[in-house]
Image (cartoon, rainbow over all chains, first blue to last red; front, top):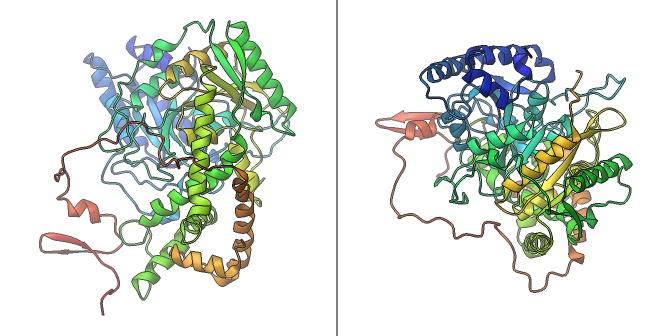
Length: 488
Length: 99
């Protein structure tokens, strides 16, 4: 039999139902893997005792024939989700000592489905980054390495710990969040599957807020089927999040295995960047060929405002962040650095508690919202955002889904791109448009670079049409037959 | 538009973030770099375009205006670095704000 840590969620579910192993066996195998892979720095907090206790409960429910959809499945939780009684850091020093007295809706949904929590995964501070290098708890190592090279690579970000934990077979799946690409880019860098659903599909309640009009939770898993299982369990309508959308959650597994004959998939010409890496271009061509062979029809489409998406994002997201992060004032939770006045207490706490990237974004956000600049920057960005969303509406008159690369490169080395913020921001060039328009997007591993690193393809869907994403990505996954595994 | 040292210091004060004087020059350079990259938005013709603040198309959910939550000051204050229990209430402690 395969090692328990190699099983997919779907296979583990079958094994548990057939009593081939217990939930405790399954969790113990992952707890051991977590301890062994500590060098990756994928977890900020490990909760092995809680995991085994939850697994025991799962065994009881399995025996009673009362199993949930994720009964006994060990998962990792991005440390941006508040977990009752378990420290939640958001990767920041400023939340030192914060133990939430409540549970986020998404994680609660998972526990209600019977899932087991292994621990809380590392991330860029407040989810601001594309490398995991901005975490106050140190960077995460990608379990993949370049062929014949010992240099450590980044797992991408901001959900780098989640992607690394799933790729390294420490967790069967992990929660993640995506504000500009933070699920899809690390999934691509680590050779796993990540889906950002439509804005409003998953409740944001209890998730540490970064940019509220863009933030959305989703799963990272090892294959598309597992993503469908986990997505269904995470999604729900939640009255506690005013932007949560009251719609039934479909059975995403039912979308797998359907034919895509006659489906039209758009190829946005603006995504062919000048100086794009030939291997990314080749992978994209390959993806087009795979879908064509399955009976789908490529359509040339135009998303004319693509080049303005990142600059728009770097006004909208910091503006929202500067407001959301105002709550870290040293008074209510986390770090407090004393001062002689309340203002000094605020300034000292925030000066000491925020890292360089977070500070940078709060300052940009404060600047673009300040008197005299609001119209020139913030209002302008909201208008361009409307045009970006309109681009997609127009495109979807001619196609059902859009195929693009996930990221402009494979994983880079730890320490690279650190001295130029804008160069780091460009990682999200293919993913950020999706957040601005509130659409669903999935990344799946589709091939290896010349250096032996995973590369991802992205599918973008219509709002609330995750089912088409699952159908099409399942077809691509079968065609790609990606079986490579990280060596580290 | 230029983001000089004085502007960064002013914005840092607005954001209530203490920035050591020695960091201001470097930060001004970084922020200026980001803002000049963002400047390309000015070339987009947005006349008559309604600004988009939310992608959610449905009307935000409404509920009756009544208290549905609360009554647990202990849980609210439990994570504070400095709090005090007075009688039945739990309070945050801060430096004196009224002379």
